[in-house]
Image (cartoon, rainbow, N blue to C red):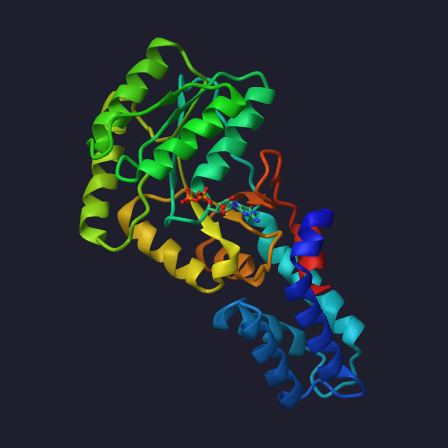
Length: 299
Ligand code: GDP
């Protein structure tokens, strides 16, 4: 929690300081509400969420005295209400052999790192894990995933650079089934420069997996970099067109976080938030705790 708190420090001190300067000895009127709304938008909560929050703050309190502490407490509670329904850890169904998790997201979002962290978590829980280096286009991605696999002690299925990603997924699935592996984590390409190509590739990967195991992939998780702010919202929209996204992991909430975007995503998409990345290390994947997050964000 300390890392998250430190990471969100920049967002929270902006929000907290902003609220204090808006609401010191002032009433809750249209002027202060507008200032608050601007502050929340600047903190990456998104326009519609910022409006919703300020409108509900105004209910019954409009034209009355209010303190900054009251505003903060109100916001923390309301943000927690937005976040609570989406806080859902990835749940593995043990009947799935393997349980197939497809990891999507733009390059640099933290996909490979998150796969490494998840692999470690599942290994620690005593599950057998296999990784598939499905970004067959980038040598660095394949190498990096192999490093994570070695570190955790789980096999990594790779093919030569430039191979068909769907063929790789097929082979990985074949092996995972033959070895009765519990969890298969499949990395995917994240280059958005050629969206058509990416779309075709992802669709083919999903199709191939679905042909081999009904209902698979069981999860298609998008990895989002919190430091990209509102761009993360856009990324979800883009990837929802490419694949049936079932959940979110948000990374880099330790760094110069713009954590408000997690609230924007939760409010806009209602997709489960499975976990949050709070560092580059193998243990730096936390369960998503809405109360802690809301409090850390508002400061
Ligand atoms: P990919 O291209 O989506 O596979 O992204 P990578 O997994 O290679 O991550 C890109 C960079 O972000 C690397 O330098 C990672 O160490 C870093 N990174 C990933 N997750 C986190 C996180 O939660 N916190 C921080 N501070 N860095 C992270």
